[in-house]
Every structure is written in C-alpha cells, then in structure tokens.
Amino acid sequence: MIQERITETRALAAREFEAATTLAEAEAVKLTYLSRKGVVAELFKLMPQVDAAERPRSGQLLNELKTELEALAERRLAELRPKVSGPLVDVTLPGRKPFVGTYHPLTIVMREIIEIFRSMGFRVADGPEIELVRYNFDMLNTPPWHPSRDESDTMYLPNGFVVRTETSPVQIRVMESQQPPVRIISPGRVYRRDRPDATHSPMFHQVEGLYVDEGVTMADLKGTLLHFYRTLFGAQTQIRFRPHFFPFTEPSAEVDVTCNFCGGKGCRVCKQTGWLEMGGSGMVDPNVLAGVGYDTEKYTGYAFGLGIDRIAMRRFGLDNIRLLFESDVRFLRQFPAAC
Picture 1 (cartoon, rainbow, N blue to C red):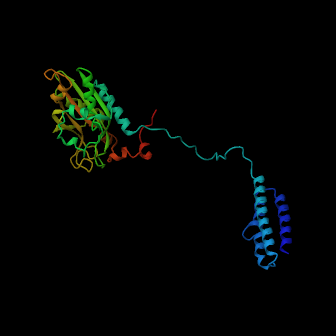
Picture 2: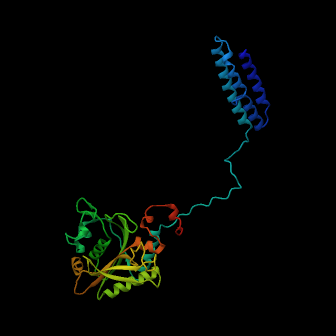
C-alpha cells in the first residue's frame, strides 16, 4: 500500500540525512528524495492507482511527507554549511578606491576670477537674488519701455520684486552705502527667460565689476579686462569692444574674446564669427551716479558684466553650457578634487 511506502520513505530519508557528513552528501540525499524525478515525485505518480476511498488520506500523508523532508533537508544542510562569524570577503579582489569629492567647474572658475580681480584691488560684494524692481531697473537708468523689463525676459514676483536679471543691483547697494573710491566685483546667480541651448540657460552666473573714482576712463576699463582675460586664458588672448547700448552705461560696449574652439576661424559654438561674447561693459551713466548721490562733475567710473558660465566653457573647452547644470557625475569627476 502507498501509505506503507510513505512510512518507509520517511524513516529511510531520515537515516540517510543523518548519515550525511558533508554538504555534498546532504545535497545528494535531497536530490534523491525531492528532485523532479525523486522518490517523493514517484510516489505522487502512484496516486491514480490508489483506491478512491483511500486517496484523500493518502494524498494528505504524501503532502506531509514532502513538507517534512524539505524541512529536514534544509535543517541538515544548514548544519553542514561552514560557520562564518562575519561577512564573506574575497581577499583576492582589488581594493575599492574611495571617491573623493571634486570642485564644480563653475566653482573653480569663480574662485579664479575672484583671485584675479582681488590682485587688481577689487573686493567682493554680495546681494540678494530676489531684488526690488527699484534696484534691478529704476536706479540702473532702465526706462519703463526697455525690452529687458518685459515679462517675456524677466521673472516678476508680487509686491515689486523680481528674480534679479543681473548682479548690477549690488553695485547700487554698495554705492548707496559708501562714497568713492569704489572698486568691487559681485559674482552670483542671475535669471532670465531664456530658451536653453548650447550657449544659453535661464539660470546662469555673472560677475559684475564697478570702479568709481576721479579720472576713471574707458582706457582703464579695456586695460582691466585685457589683463583679466590674459591672466585667465593666456598671453595670446585678444579681446574686442563692439559698440552697444546699455541703459546704465554710456558709452557702452560688448566684450568679445577670441574663440578657443576654432582659433578664431569660425565654428558652431561661436556661430562662425571667431569670437565668443563674454559680456557687456561701459562707462557708468552719470544718471546712475547722480541717483546714489555722487558728484558727477568730480567722479567717473566704469562697469562690466561677464558671463561666468561662458568663461567656464572656454576655460575647460566645453561646447555645451548644459553640461554645467546636468549634475552628471561622469562629467564632474574630471575636475580637480576638493582638499
């Protein structure tokens, strides 16, 4: 009868598991009884031959046998497995080199810029990114009809605030707080409604510069910027001024630097011109100086605003500004490690 065979199988399996002294022997016993072609599986194949009246009881006993043997097998295998006090370690594997944090390329460039201007006597000034319209536009001589004040270009907030479009408001705040001479730079984040592409981003970084004193001229401005770019990019660097209009400077000029991607021959990055636009500059408009209480008959000054992101692109040979904001660790690990 099948019930007798179940009883015999239970006793025999128990003895064989007990007799196994190695992990391999216990695995062999488990296969003998519990594999798809093992003893228990063969007993299940006999069920159709069992009398219908005995079949429910026989099926129950057979399922109990399978459960008991599975538990017995796992218990015996656990007893025979090597006992390890800690986690398994393959000492032949090479060591894992710890990751050391790196400076972001914008941080690297910003520090270099600050050091260069400090060597020329400039100090660093800071200001809020959420700015009053009065400081962002009105006191910078920007008329109400100027395109930069359109909502398509500027992000307005309630109660007369904007997300600053440049760091020039810092210059106004500094001039309100002290009399000339004033020689400052103000690096920081600025925001505009730009469509992202290879050279534009809605959030980017600028460094604004201001020098106000007696006898300051356009020649001082060009000499300062030429020294700055040659210190940053090398003695062969050339810059050019292109006439432009900014409400807060008169005369005004765009600052271009020779494109390092093509050597000035023209490429996709410089739009085939051979030059990269780096920012704007000019002599501070007398209306701006008068607005903060400076004597315009006695003092003159220059101001400039340079794009830190574009400087970083040239400094590290990047052809897409979006690399600076995507937080790709593979890209960021290429830069010098933090100390």
